[in-house]
Image (tube, rainbow, N blue to C red; front, top):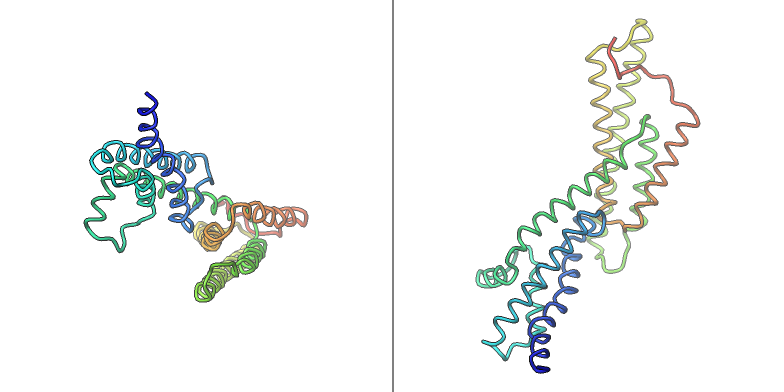
Amino acid sequence: MALDQASIISEWVLPAAVCAPVTWVCLVFRYKEDGRLLGTFRSTVLGLCVVLWTSGMAALASGLLLPLTPSVPPTAVGIATGWGVISRGRGEQPGGRAAMAVLTLGNSLLLHQLSLRLRADRADWCERMAGGFGDCWDLDTFAGDVRRHLLMRVDVPGRTSRSRTALRREINERHKEVRAAAQKWITVETKVEKACQLQGRRPDREEVRLVRRAFGEAEQYLRYLLELEHAYGRRSDGGRILALKRKHIIHAGAEGAPDAPDVSVVG
């Protein structure tokens, strides 16, 4: 009886126990620049589903295959199954892909759903952080703070000099796009405001469209910059970015927004 229990633990439980942490580490490495596995409840649940499914496949493969191949240690099956999660299908032999597909049966669907969820989480986070600015100057200043926050965190251990240079270039380029869009926004808004004041009227439909489009472009480029923060920043940095945003919004509210044409309605 004791021998049977030891055999069950060795052939079924041990591979699953070894596979679970290996799978999680591989998931973190695979999605390190795509999103945060523990960022939201849904992404956490999907990540745990991948771990549980992969561990179950490791236990099943070990329990069914080890009696046929006793020379293979149970831990090797667990490690190999968990390691299969890290691959994106590049640089593998066809036979290796086929074998790993059998070991991680069903993981492709879960990984696909997890990838979609991480992208959606990032888009939602960037949209929340980029929204709420009523003035282009506050948006521009906030973008500058985000740029400085990112540049101060480029030089991290393990990142090559080439990747650091490329990341700095991308940060600066995206920040320039935000500044250009913000400048376009204030130019269009000022032009419409002056025309309305001179003619004693409210903005027409075309003027409303131009101002709103310029506003939307500035917000969209800010989201592109914030994507770098979400991809390369730590999870705890989200609180810092939110504090920077609140500082600018509170500052704008304290000073009072400048007079501008009412583009919410068309008279």
